[in-house]
Length: 131
Length: 131
Image (cartoon, rainbow over all chains, first blue to last red):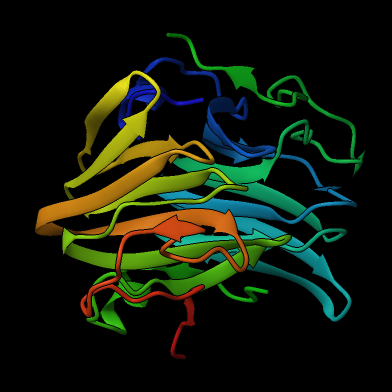
């Protein structure tokens, strides 16, 4: 539990790895994670949970495979978006972005179904923030 | 469910009322809310849930009554803090702030136990965002 406020900018300054979320704090059984992203993630889906994105800096694209077909949404700085449970999606950021995520503790970055995971994507349930 | 990204700045531009959160989107059975705050809220506690605060603009003070005694934390822009369930707390902002909250859908702004609620504080489980 967070006993003192944490500046998200400070949390982001403690690591450089892309696509490798750090857990900033927890709210009940949810994680608040921050991540630096650049390039392409992989197509994946979380079968049992929605996933919340807030762009803190930069621009994030999320490709979505919906019943109606495939589309992309573009999130600029200060934008939020929720990917519904079960929806295949692929985040990407050509020029890099910093993001905040809400999702249940234990949620994998590559979901329950995913493409092959390349080396630049960290398949993880989130890492502790370095003090 | 959010079908398009929402700019938090846009969401905040749709209302002026202080201490009256708007529900921007939902993540499973949680709300993402934004609020404008200024002056003092009331001492209250949520017995069954933690409460997450992110300051989007301005400065927010949260007074806390903990087992060790009373203290305050000060959140500047970009800071996050979680008030643990059961902890009496009173948010305030002398010069005003915009905040984002993450808490279970149905959570009351004045919690399960609270002081008398003055007119300037909206006792609500959050309002829908105007389109």
